[in-house]
Length: 384
Image 1 (cartoon, rainbow, N blue to C red):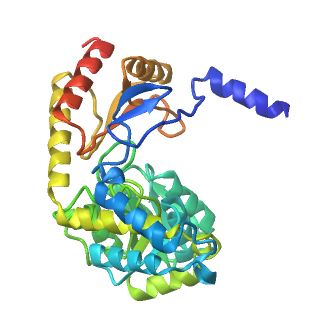
Image 2: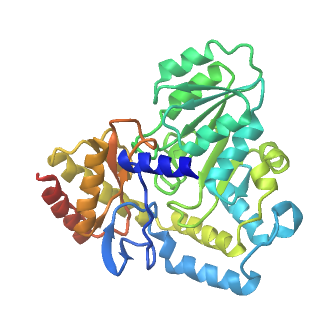
């Protein structure tokens, strides 16, 4: 099909062509690709739990007891005791009445947004929300409005003109995945109450990292009882797979009966649920994981600041190194790769034009030697 070949050529010419690299060992601070070891600063395994001995042991035990696949949707015969145990653990962890688990975070966002609002309703999104939120808003069929990133004046301007809508939903990431900054949740909650709107927060990159107990940015801002819908993933700091939504009992019962990505998808393998339970327990029991992560984050940001590197407005373990030009970002990423450091270039359409960057993420399992190696290579490659 010629139009596909033509489109691929355009993608390559614009510097936006993407290729896969196969990792040949476990996801850790050092990974092997084509027989060479690289220092990884791009994984979402923020607490190193994907390879924690307790998590691996929980998986082995679950496979022995339950086998591997669930082999049906939760509403047929795929609902196993470990799925329900995971949902109970999430609801306790998040201090909500109940929770529902989806096979992926992407599916969770599609399912919950398209269930909560539909034609004749209004859904409002931050401009820099994750693609799964944007797609969920579009799929819902509700009127869709976008406010400038973290701009509360624009959010309120939209809500002032919404008296005709019975249902209004504001959706935001808690930690924005490309800039690493935080949503102003206290202001969002205040404005939502003023205009009788629901609030949904995606804690994908906040869970396990923020808050005294690692519950996320909602906990960090002391808003546990103020946010209507809390969504998140099990695939980042938790180091497993899947997405979840938690809230009051009626919300979760409603989603079990309305969310199509839940109703019509085979359930997660039970051993995946066992891994998530083990990780959530570790997050609650071992606060040192979070402490070491934040020490690493602070160290890196201080050193990058001294080098004069623009980190945009990062407030988290996601640290963008702003480059601007797409080809230059790709070239720098390649130079780092040649020197044994893996930090990908993020380009349009993932980020706006002229804001291409290197997206660096930090893990608690990074050692001081890892950080020193990073700084040395960055200084050389960036000629600083």
